[in-house]
Image (cartoon, rainbow, N blue to C red):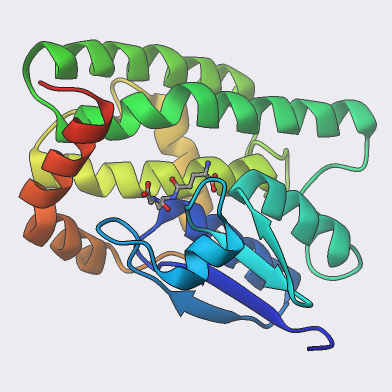
Amino acid sequence: MADEVKLLGSCKSPFSRRVEIALKLKGASFELSDLDVFFSKPPELLQHNPVHKKIPVLLHRGKAIAESLVILEYVDEVWSSSGIRLLPEDAYERAMARFWAKFFDDKCIQPLWMSCWTKGDMQKHLLEESKLHLTTMEGALKDKKFFGGEEIGLVDIVVLCSVYWAQIAQDVFKVDVISEEKHPILCRWMKEITNSDVLKDCLPPRDELFLVFQTNKDDIAALMTARYGSN
Ligand SMILES: N[C@@H](CCC(=O)N[C@@H](CS)C(=O)NCC(=O)O)C(=O)O
């Protein structure tokens, strides 16, 4: 139990991957409990995240922490002396990183993701919304190498996972959500970050995720539309 670290997550989840990346960047060893959470709720998940019933949940020294942004900050604090810092040292810069991570989660994820899985007017509306908010995110990046400046930080990890997943989903559904033309700054950043020495082995192989989406696309689209609205 001393420093036992277990992640209730899934290799198919971008939120879970945020935490995996953070733990890897810190050099922390952990066990991944790969759960299937969409069509059933494993008892382990209900026990440790009774409020949201979602992955990821980090179990550390027998205590559970839920919500990926909360977990990332926890990881940064607990493993403060190892690996890279996820949040900046400067208080203002730290506040800004929290602001952009929250903006991304609150405003960008749903339209970005759902515009891949919907059709018709709803898809048109979501594509507009996604374009607007991702352009705002590009404003936060401007001519910086990473959201974290010269180094990869918390916002980079947060945005990376969702954009990587969405770029694969958009290819499955042949939708133009993120392209060089629409989001040149974000695409430039994606190339930089996915090729960086620090992160290049931290993402799941593209072909594997493509196959998961391709194989399950009707089920996932039905689930998403049932949850977030009809076409
Ligand atoms: N705000 C949460 C979102 C987590 C989330 O949506 N997890 C998904 C997997 S990608 C999940 O557990 N879904 C199960 C469900 O919605 O029933 C976080 O940042 O951790």
